[in-house]
Length: 557
Ligand code: TEU
Image 1: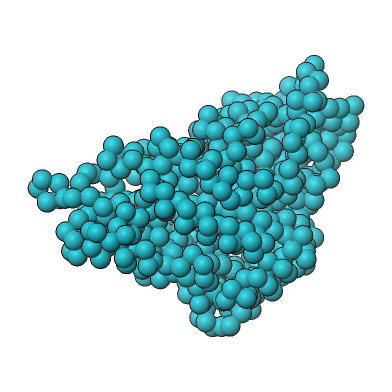
Image 2: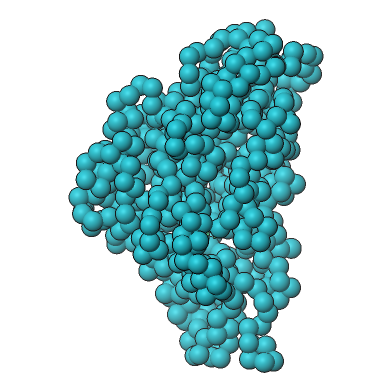
């Protein structure tokens, strides 16, 4: 096979520290509780930094830790410049930044600036009267002629995105819960306040930001436009110039609406916007067209490969990909894409292999590295998530049987990702000495970090190995992507190539042994870089794969 030798074009001219790093998402409420109140906290995170250092992590994304009434677990902020009491203090935070830095780990804050809490002083002022100087910090509209909401925009958590406020008789916009009023980004004072707050955190030594629903900030509610509003990219360029631009920070935007084309606008090298975005096409393509994630379709590997491959190609010479299977809003990766009944360990390792050898920055969601699974809650009372509880009410009111909703929630509720981190086989998985705010998954007695570290064949050691390989092999970071056997519904086969080095990755997505005929270009001999069964150092014309087997062979010409 004749590969175009375009090394210059492929080894990105602007190498960044976050190209070789692996990120880890901490959901503070569920990570580690130091004081026994059942809620994770910052001292708890500090106590686990060595664990993350051992895993090889270079940066931690913290879900929100700011002061908040916790209507949406901190994605509703009432004070951007303070820490929620249950998580600790600003001193704790400064100590976290220092201790992480001492281990070469950066801290990313979650920037939630599409909306605030309704308890934020800006909103308290804003709702007080029409002439208040803060009125225009939020989005207020007169009722429609019939007294109803100004238009039919819907909240992500169900129901209208407008709520009537009795104080002035106007409606305010909230694209999430009614306790999360949307900020008015068209108001320059709002933008100045946000930028000044960002600089305040940057001065405390953070490594960057994950930006919550950042594709919403250009919204044009009167036109029914939520994502990709006409001024979205102007705002991001303005933000970049006013805050993190030129400071070597990592910025990653959460953009459910992103396409490969818009991803280049966000992360293109001459755009001065963000380092990268989280794109969700591989997630949403598995949702039902009517019931969305509450009725997910069975995994379609051909479609999944097509989406991942499309993003690899589209951002191959400009822009940058993020890589992830899970986060705090998504089901557990091994439950969604793997097999937790017979092949939890093999399939979790297979998924990690496929993801970590792609081009982009991998994000590991807490617990993924030990193969934590969805939680089989048996009653709705065990759920805590506002989205799940709202949706349950709406669906059951509309006639769905509660047990049917529960089935969907078992597969798709955000709480699957939010049960406490399983550290050991101690009570409550070693997460807390008190009663956790949400039930621990019963499988903590076998699925836990202590057991995983003690077993060199564990999922944890596999992650650690892959994270280390990324630092050692530029082909993983910068190699050109090419796929094979695109129409095969069982296996994912791809190649990465950089200069004289080639890496071929083979992964069986099925709980069955398979015999595979490999195209001549994918047959190579070299070094086994990763495997979840016996090591392999060659790919011949035919190969037999074990259930969920995945391996990678590196060849140097
Ligand atoms: O999520 C954005 C978002 O659109 C989610 O509501 C998503 O559609 C849903 O969770 C998918 O199941 C971000 C945060 O990640 C999420 O935790 C927050 O609740 C939300 O913004 C509001 O801040």
